[in-house]
Length: 225
Length: 112
Image (cartoon, rainbow over all chains, first blue to last red; front, side, top):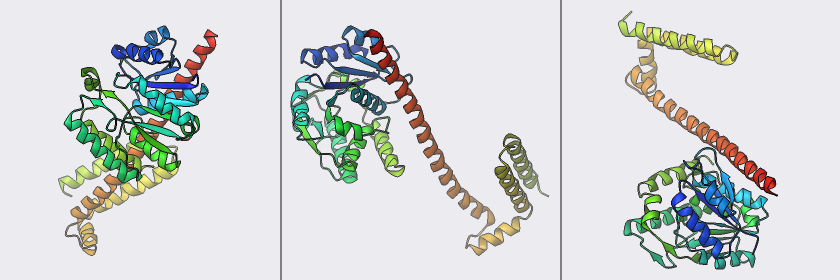
């Protein structure tokens, strides 16, 4: 249990972060790595009070960069299973157990959360369409049909985490992970997760037009590989 | 010599002088730039010649040929620059990552 590490990338999340960390600690996950991606106000106070590992990028680089930093640090900390978790409170700590178990039992190298096979609250129609389009594009690029794309909750085995290297600093990292799965022939599985879209997470989250920017990054990623 | 020819020659010469001044150490680049400059001035003075070359390639006017070549060149430069920006971004990311990981490790060591 102790070698489960939760990686939370965050940027200006001081409003929710404390609550998210408390939720994880209450659920029995004390090893938390917060990667502060150059937030305007330091989040070290929130983390120190809860005895979390706190890493801070000197400049804002993007969620992909923050995840990669957290994953590398987790490997240094001898994590056996690394769980990525969003800082805006949309994920449920109760979902971690089944995801991490699949890894520790050796049934998969990477477990991806899916909001469409699980129960999801407050998902708008446009958002659903955007994600489904992303799924289709990912299918074209990777050949893997997944029911969800760009879901922040994942569990990764230590060995898989060592192989995966995210170079896409911004949101295109979520597609890059799928391409890395294919490149390293990792065994993946999707697991239904519970997602709550709150007013806060909707405001903090991706705008629909941002999808175009992400697509642009994905295409360029393929071009400049 | 017409006004536009004077303007173009003056512009090309200025850019070349500036470039050579800045890049004194890079002999090859300076030579290439000087050659480019001379070719440019030559064609500015002999515009009919570009038209003849253009006709040979099936393009009506010399100015059009130059335009098409520039579009290609522009795309090439754009891609090269973009690749360089990505490389730069990767370097900055690597630096920020190393710094953040090292300082976090030092912190935990300090607490023990």
